[in-house]
Image (cartoon, rainbow, N blue to C red; front, top):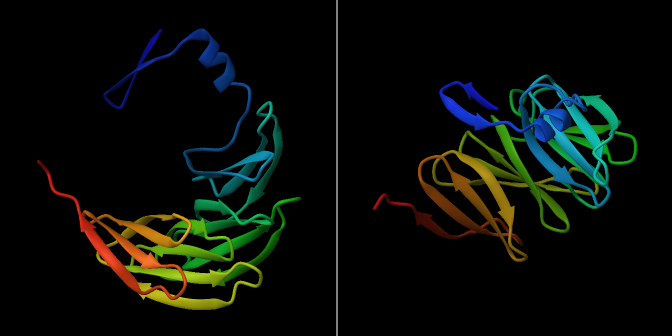
Length: 184
């Protein structure tokens, strides 16, 4: 069967339809993270859903204000709170809120570098927090409006809505380079 949604034609098979109707995870899922056993999903409805990865069964649903990006640090789940200039640290075992920490305007995406948590803020900065206690270690200006972030084992990469990707040294947040994307 074919579905037309907002001008997009989708192929929907009976098997996919049956699976899609089995678990309610909220409305408009944004971010997804894996903790080694479970999948965590942020939802526009103001919740974070925890699913068992092996079979997709619902483990729990937890209230989090404006959840967007999500990452696992080996012990905790970090969720950006887009509208509130904060990031929420959740206990990965039971989903309870450990604490909220201040970051920049429009906290969007989050990654873990093995020791620290990095949060992109659409205000044009990337915030670095120590994962163990949420201590603010630095806020670094980047080119444009960062909306994606990744750790490559040595450096932080921030994707900016303005068409650049910026590389930051994970040790001190200093810029290493900016790479511009051009249409061909």
